[in-house]
Image 1 (spheres, one colour):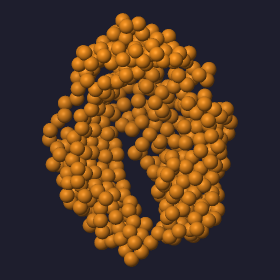
Image 2: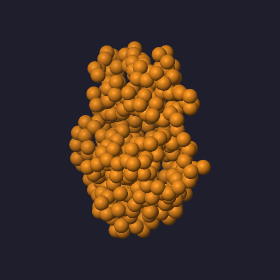
Image 3: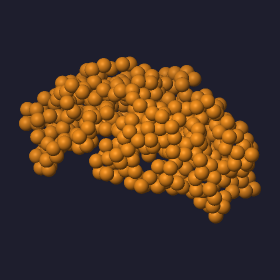
Image 4: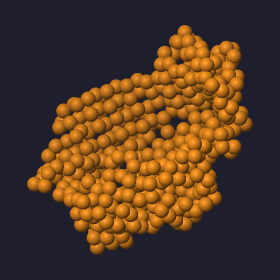
Length: 449
């Protein structure tokens, strides 16, 4: 895949740094005891086609400045997309006005200066794709047509999209900290509809990466979209039963997102978590290891510091099944009487250690059970750990896919589910912040007819 014509110039980092400096100086001059500001600027292109025709072509150019001031525990926030001196001054004044009327929170404020990041490794996050609108449309049409060509049962399309975005984020605070990074993200997405005498099914596939050279080829994306759509034809319902379940990698990430929510500061200080006070306890099967790895080059969750300016760090979250640490911002750490873990804004590349098995190996090992490939709805009770989500996928018999299934619900409790993880495959999905392969669970409830 080649880069094509027209460059989009990135905004002047020195000028944006000067704006943050100005904001912090003005806030201090107006009486703020502390202040912080962040700027995001970027531009992108998105070409959406359907049945060979342009459905939508969007060009976006974004910029925004967010300002937060503190007056001895009182907090005020304002934002603006106008970077003129007058608008910025008005925004600082607005934040100060809000702070003066807000209630005092003894935990509000900046993180201690000594915790600010001092090293800023190049994480290789910025690879602008200078593709022209015409070339993006052409690529999207090619992807969709390639999917149509894969199988005569592909009767319709829900669209093919080629999108690219490049941006710059800067954060600064009155602890003499200002830094940030340029970044990019590119996607090719294809969603198709297949039809036979049993009815219609819809599915698709996409590739996402920092560097357009790392995207899957249009041929691979379209073939996978077509395969996943056609294989769902003839889907059946299941009767209610108990059986082992494999969560395919793209849906397995949700299991670990629920973990992060449960061990995050907000859930803990509200005492609204099924993993309350579990640090140091075994919460997973003992072969499960989970690490936060913020410095993986080109990864979608990589970052040298968090939203507080605190340095990120590699660390174990789960080791041999035991919960090692929580996920805390400066604010939540203060409320809990603990130290920040550098996670204001969330985790940075949650890496779930995979085994040697492929997904096919897991299916063979399972013998009889359910392979979940798609989920609908959000059915996790973060207080109790109860888990119940609509699902579709494949019923497995004798270690092979027997037939596609739909309109079922998989249910359990995450406390048990985490301990019942039998194996994690090596088919790691790189398209997000949670990097996991497919996950096989011991018995779960499958609710159907």
